[in-house]
Image (cartoon, rainbow over all chains, first blue to last red; front, side, top):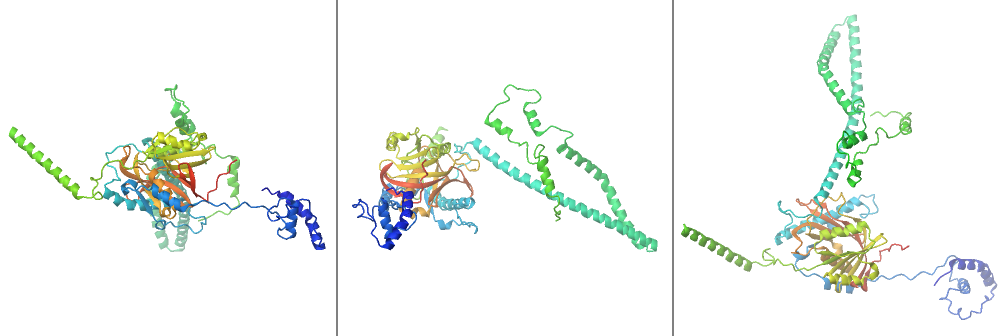
Length: 340
Length: 252
């Protein structure tokens, strides 16, 4: 039964005033020649006249009136379901079925209080809930299986086909290792950064100490000039010690400094190997003669090789630009420097 | 020398005879539940599952079916089923392949996947919609298990609360569980198939049972089954259950 909502609305609004006037004036509402339909006013809402009548009787309120579809009833035949289940039931030993049930209440998962959505959306907690259920089942089942003589662990020399090939497991392992390596690298870099900051602080402190000791010396000299000998002697002794230590250190210190310098140059310096990473990779693959005929292939492996070491990383040679770096510089220009 | 050898042989034969006598005695005394040796090594639970998909199925669904095939040795696959034939044709296909269970995966326009699990002669059939499919090939799923090993089936207690869940549980046990002493199966139980009801849907996970007690690594495919309808017959018949919470995808 289609209800022409727009037309109804218009007609109702149009005739509202009419009807109101007529009701007030207590005049009979004009009826059309469709006398038969007007008898069953509750059912047929198609024609405008019926609607007007209904409105007059205050069965309809102004606004959009839509005929709702009847609420759908969902089939749920419990008896037949139970019977079907019984018919289907596999009545064999537990060793054939191997099924276990675990109560939901035993799988405790603590949800953070802020989360209103519950287990379904919290991926981590949801998976741990499933894991717990599985663990409980395994714990229950292992003694049962032992009794029946069904083994869960295979002997070391039992080689059989696995569901995932060895190659695939290799890839999985590599993936895991690379993740670990990444995490370690990040930790290293973070520590270095912190050390640098610390180093800076230590440097500042050392300089302060030097200044202080110089001051003391000067004062001691002054005192000596005035006549107080003791302080100067003490200070001179201290100076001697420091100088002595420094002298010894300098011998090794020079060597150490040279070694560190060399290492730095090898790692970072552009002077020795001025080729970029990209060029180095290409040299490895195609450089210095060798078979060039079948060396370039467009396969999944070659694609993966090319994108293994991303060339333009965050702070690489070609990353960023004047604007990007400038924005960084000038953003912190007038900010007060943080001191830990 | 010959006499000695003969004597030795005689002794050996005696020992063998004694041992056999002992074994027979043992068998007589023990009940089937106590010793595993007395369990007949016969394949009793004859379940054969037909794994079939319709045409126009996306790569994910295809891979999941392939994963299920490798995991379950009691399955048989067939060529893609053309939906225009009508679902009743599937019964005939199953009869030809001598299967008593059918798992049929169909997809509408490569978008919404539906899984039918039905028992062949007169059994019930359940239509699910599969969501959140993840195949075994994902690198985050690190576990591995034997091909054709028998799974432990772990269920929630919510499966016992309502009759329609009970029926679903029974179907899953018979379809997903590998029969004991199946010729292609491995005798070890080294993975757990976990079925949990959450938000009125069945979440399926597959874990490998590691060496230590609580070391479960996720292996196989992951998916969510949302039951839509349960029918009395195989791909037809009276509707026994309709899921009121299921919202069909909009057909455009």
